[in-house]
Structure formats: C-alpha cells, structure tokens
Length: 252
Image 1: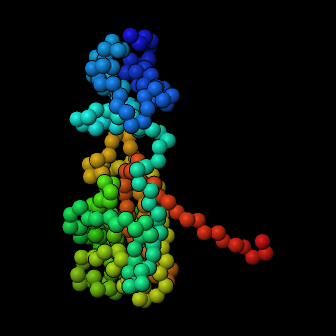
Image 2: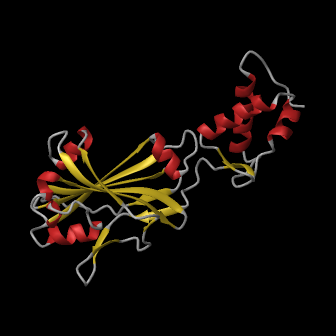
C-alpha cells in the first residue's frame, strides 16, 4: 500500500503521485489509469477522494475520461491530433479556399442572427461598440474534430451588399468573392487561448480545465475591415500552422 503523508489533503497527494508517474512514463500516454476502485484499494482511501484526484489531473490536462472505457493518460507535450495550415488560396474558378484542403463540414444548417459588436470585435472591425452585425453561426466537423465558426459582417458594410435585404450570409468564400470584385482584399489572423464559455464547452465536448483556441480572421477591402471569421476549437484538438514571410529592409 502506498503511504500517504499529512497535512496536505489526501486527494492532492494522490494527484501529485499520479502526476509524477505520468511524467516519468510509469503511466504512458494513451494507456488507461487504474480504475477508481483499484486506486482506492492501493491508497487505502475512499473512491470520492480518488475521484477528486482524478479531477485534478483532468484540470491539468494530463488525463481524459472516456466513458465507459475509463480514464486515459494524455501526454502533456503531445501535439494535437490535427495540424492545420492557416492560409487562403484563390482557385482558378475565382473562389477562396483554405490551403489545408481538408474541408470543414457543417454538422447542421447554419443559423443567422443579428448581434451587437462587443469591444474586442469592434476594435478589429473598426466600428463603434454596439454596432449591429450580421452573423452566420455554424458547428463544423473535420476528421472527428469539432469547431464553432462565426462569419460576421457589420451592418455599416452589409448595407452596400446583396445581404442588406437578405440577412442570411452565404459562405465565407462567397462573401470574399463579392468584396474581391470591388478592390484589393487582404487578411490577417489573430490567435489566442482562453477558457471556453459554458455553451462552447458543451458543443466542443471539452474537458474541465481545457482551454480553447480562438482564431479570428479579419478581411479588409482597400484596408477597410469588411468581414470577420471567428473560429473556436479545443486547444488539444488543433495545431495552427503558419508560414512566416521574411520582410527585407532596404540597406540590409
């Protein structure tokens, strides 16, 4: 039987012991941890105490519960299951597609809503906070990875487009094709990690303590922001890959 020392909470001691065994390879990534009952017998503790320790490991991103199979070890340094090249290409037909080539498919028909811009969205779109926006909402899947996708066009931009009378936005490609016919298009992406909102955690089937990757793509027409895509995906499900262009300064 493994000896437990006081005064640190017993479940914290169990969590620390299991964490060390995961990091030193005793419990290898991809393999199941012993069951709650087995751990309770090994440590001489109750199953609720063991469950608290397992929850601590879940929060740390070291294990994942896969019901009814059990609790499986995750490598803290493992790359996500999917790596995605973040770049746009223009096809010979004139449409716009992601360079990655593995298309995201809508899980169900997208919904269309009108919302007011919050501070962060307003800053990126160059509009006042609270300005109404057309939003196309979709839950998408690619090779078993789930994400939420929002396509956003401010009202001040949409009033000069075909969507002024029909607020149902088309696909991002169709939006970009429309603007591309009226000037010079450019795109910029912003990537950050944050904790998921409750509805996002449910949709993405996120585990406790797992952050999400929030990717914001801003499209500009002649340097004026005209549209924005917001993508949210589990942090352990996707690795965003970018090519870095080299800018040569004169005289160097």
